Length: 271
Image (cartoon, rainbow, N blue to C red):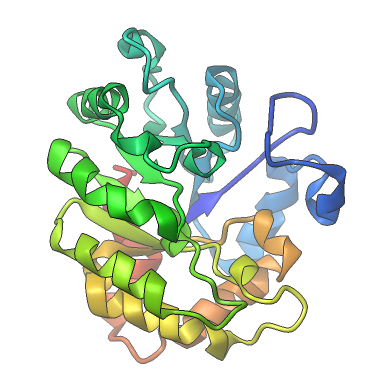
């Protein structure tokens, strides 16, 4: 089993624009020693470690953690996609698999489709790297242009673009997500959903309409499971996140579940 989306951080070591003391359980260091026993208990063999700071220095630190911990199968780091010298920032390392940018922190919703960004994204595909889209519903209308402009770039939408589960709203999100399914280079992560629900009272069945929608649009071939640890701890333990998705996907065939919980992530991230 592969967890396609988890994080580590050290408070104050890098700039985390989203981090503040009012985040409670998240406002502390999270390191491999915290996660390793949890993975062993749940039978998770590999993880994909994803950036949490727009920082090349953080990417190098994440790769140091990957060197020291065999369960980290790959790292999704960061580069300045708008830089004309992007190639100089791309780290040559067997576990350096992809790039992500905190698009949700950008003031302009159309940040992704600026010519400089699209040029940078094409440099990623030329280097054999993938790109994680950290977006919300409002950004989805720009993703087709990314997919069309970068047809060789493997793309994955993190956290299903953060649907408004707590408000029990699905129409606007599903209508924005649907057009993206026609692009064969776009995948989605079944991750981060518990923190889009009501943190203190959510039930597994509240996630079902959103998971079913993703299955209908992208099928078992283009979905991958991730916990979004430790962010998930705002709403659930690691174990409960895994158990919820095992429940939500139990009616799929064994082969389909194998894809979502393992082989799709292995293929996408070249693990």
